[in-house]
Length: 423
Image (cartoon, rainbow, N blue to C red; front, top):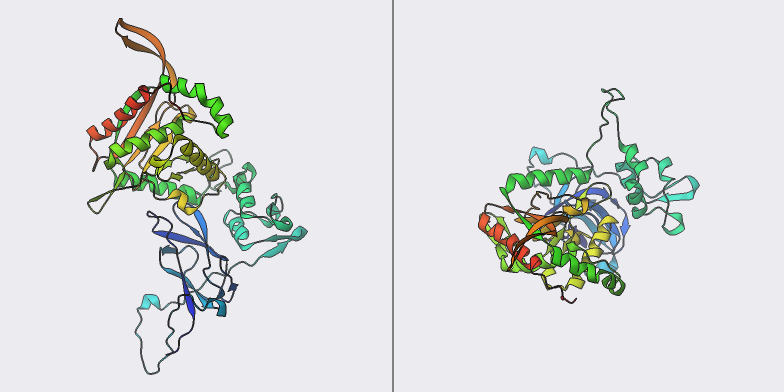
């Protein structure tokens, strides 16, 4: 038996809820030399796209999966022959062939495994170089080389970066090019296009959630006049001082984080007939993207943050989400989700639970409404600002009383808001 220094590069852990990823594109091929932190492969999880870097210096000698294969966290994705500098890295034993031993293999494993040829950086017109990652994105989105020349570049020596092409894809010109007319229909009928990868993932998640959890909803109307007036009174000074806008979403994240401590069953998940009550409170904030898709960045340990801290961290996450610059860790381990449908002037919404969570809160628009105001001298009609909250929750472990009391507690905090609150 001889021992050769080999390194098994595995799919890294990317959060508690991420168990697998899809191989999108190999950025390196068998025989390529790699350095520590060189990107080896582009992967896609159900949350976000990312690249896996090398942990060592060496030469790739085996790719263990093909493009579009689904890989479990911890599985070996490629094997690297270590250079001298990396000899201290994790090694595996290679057993020399021993004659006169017959191995019986299952027929289905007898097929030759072929690795996809990796596109090398290539040069096209006007001395513009295209990296394998950019080219793979272009091919996936059906962008021609001629169209690539139209993309504004921000990289070194005029190179087109990943951000450049993703920004271009969001433009109306690129989107219109991806629409295809079904030849079986006349020109005056519907246009037809394939779902994007993100749309497919969202569709699967929505269907899976409805199949997994028996959704039940509780609605409540809240008088937000005191809170509204308080925010109006401080928002300008706050923006000057902190360089951020203070929104009702920020305030709701703060309030919901505190109320979840009082209702820990809503900060849980259900698996194999066991309820896992989470010690951390991590609020996901549903964020609409310019292409019409949706992503939910997660504010970790939100109950431990001040309102100012929530404003800063939420704004950072939302901004990076809209710039397609989130890290895998930014969209995992959420324990409860908030979606503000009111920003679209929607009166109320019935949200679908973000699995494996057990609850989600939809915040409706704020309207001025005539309301009955009770006083010691009797009732009278006044103009108040009101909104509707809709709480969707998993009826397998949360009954109507708990689901209703949760938003009743939120209502009590908001309607009892102290106009002298300092932040």
